[in-house]
Image (cartoon, rainbow, N blue to C red; front, top):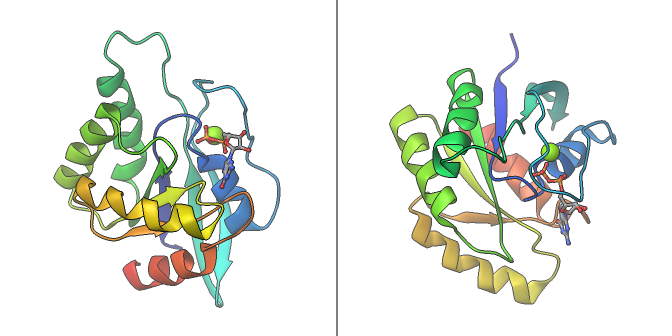
Length: 162
Ligand code: GDP
Ligand code: MG
């Protein structure tokens, strides 16, 4: 079976936009409103001739009492079946307490995790995205899922991690 790449992160950070960028179709549902509950959805993808399955996630419960717990549980289910995890953050927001809780879970999973700093739409924002090193996941990959900026470098790294 093809390796599985799971895309996790808080609502509205651009996970589905990134998945569409990677599969080259507008199939994953992009929402302007955060917190829409959605199941995990798998798509066939390829880069440089290598096939993989990419799993978009949502499913965040906006009414959960403990946001950190809810996002961690959602992420955990997708991560469990993944060979590589893309942890997406919104570079305009930076890291939040919810992001930090998710990172703790990702560390316990012992899966390879690439930190994706999304919404880096220009070069100035690329420099600012380096602050995300503080999440402890190593080098942030700055991308603009919307415009495609940085997605080739990210996919090269995904193949190396598979
Ligand atoms: P998800 O909830 O994490 O799946 O996020 P979505 O993919 O649904 O995107 C949420 C919002 O962020 C939408 O309005 C997207 O158009 C916007 N968005 C996603 N990626 C980018 C990006 O690279 N740059 C900018 N400026 N907006 C983005
Ligand atoms: Mg989504």
